[in-house]
Amino acid sequence: MSDFDYDLFVIGGGSGGVRAARVASATGATVGLAEEFRMGGTCVIRGCVPKKLMVFASEYQEMFADARAYGWDVQDGTFNWPTFRTNLDAELDRLEAVYRKMLAGSDVTVHDARATVTGAQEVTLADGTTFSTKHILVATGGRPVLPDMKNADLGITSNDIFLLPDLPKKILIVGGGYIASEFACILNGLGVDVTQFYRGAQILRGFDDEARGLVSEMMIEKGVNLHLGTNVLEMEKHEDGIWVKCSNGSEKVYDQVMFATGRTPNTDGLGLEAVGVDIGRRNEVVVDDYSQTKVPSIYAIGDVTNRVQLTPVAIREGMAFVETVFKGNPTKVDHALIPSAIFTQPEMGTVGLSEEDAREQETIEVYATSFRPMQTAFANRPDRVLMKLVVSKATRKVLGCHIVSPHAGEMIQLAGIAIKMGATKEQFDATCAVHPTISEELVTMRDPVRTA
Ligand code: NDP
Image (cartoon, rainbow, N blue to C red; front, side, top):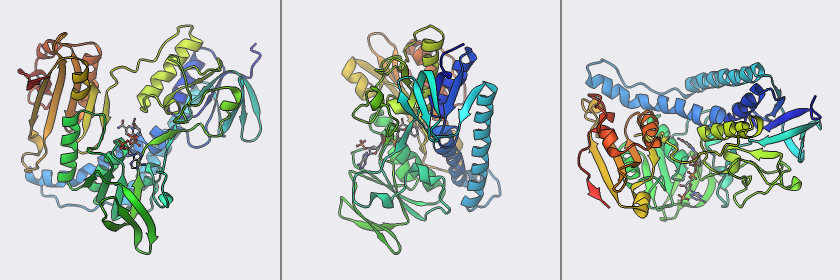
């Protein structure tokens, strides 16, 4: 019999926390989990899942024209936001119930309450109930932040977008990261007049230059009013909407302004510093390679640690934590070569080094091709695809793969396996093409476009 109420207490019911709780419980540990809001966290409730459903909804607009070009007698429809919202809410309720069922089936005790850390081995719920626990896992995620400017609270964030009673007619989206760029495309597809301001020279900073260049060009072509090197200077509430003065001097009124200017870890008021856990400059819980904090009984995973803010990474960190603490198999989290997709339109899939980063490291060969995809050629859409491999000249290993294409997310998952295994360009070439597909270009690019 343990001296503690729990072997593990997890704070936060998002993807990482739930997975860690279930896997730890399967080792025979007694596990409690506290969640103050809805089970499923950012990914399920206000992130990846509802976002992807909105992506699906927004893609139909172009499909009407495509279908007509293929001979179908269909008219452009109008999008009904309340219908989408009703179906979205029902789907999220279903998914939340699945999460709860999985936890119950795994014998994890769920506390629907906020929990704080009140000792190195003690947590306290909002109603004052205290539990002793051998280990604490902090998996409280992150939240969007508004920029530090006057009247910023007139704007909304990605949290609010799924809850709007009506779609705005005209929106300004501020930011150039994943969230800003994805929502600019989604809302544009749903028929909203979208303006996007990004303060830098090109959106999606850090990704391969050619890939993000094509994404931004196509976004503009599809109707997003993208302004680079531009930011909000002033905002005011006016009778007819939100008045915005921007850094290029122009003024305009929008129905909504959405800030997608980054996220911050949820560490406020958790009691971590008081028990000796280090909190970093960006509000993150500071952990080592094993997700352990300075207090040996307290670990943290996922967005609250501000390492790589992606659901599958949080899940893997949770699994590595269980291996380390409950299976006696110390396991570092592997953050190398993480494939990811940006669900812009066109979609972008990426793994490994950008051409720019690889060039800094060693001599490389770049293989790239760009063309119009077959499917939309009938409708004479200007869409273009980019397939790009960055290859080490010395070892022949593929260091990076960048795809801008329909279903790029699906493609990069598979290319990611080969690249994670250390495949060389010659091994890509030895793989027979699947014809006619877009992805066959990954194994048919014969000559480098440049050496750098
Ligand atoms: P990012 O950090 O990716 O982007 C924030 C953007 O806002 C940047 O373009 C940044 O500019 C800009 N910005 C920051 N502060 C200001 C300011 N004060 N005024 C104007 N612009 C500002 O954050 P996101 O919120 O887009 O996404 C957070 C994380 O969520 C991502 O890093 C990603 O890991 C994850 N995510 C993943 C998705 C996926 O896998 N498809 C989808 C959505 C999110 P600058 O570049 O100049 O710093």
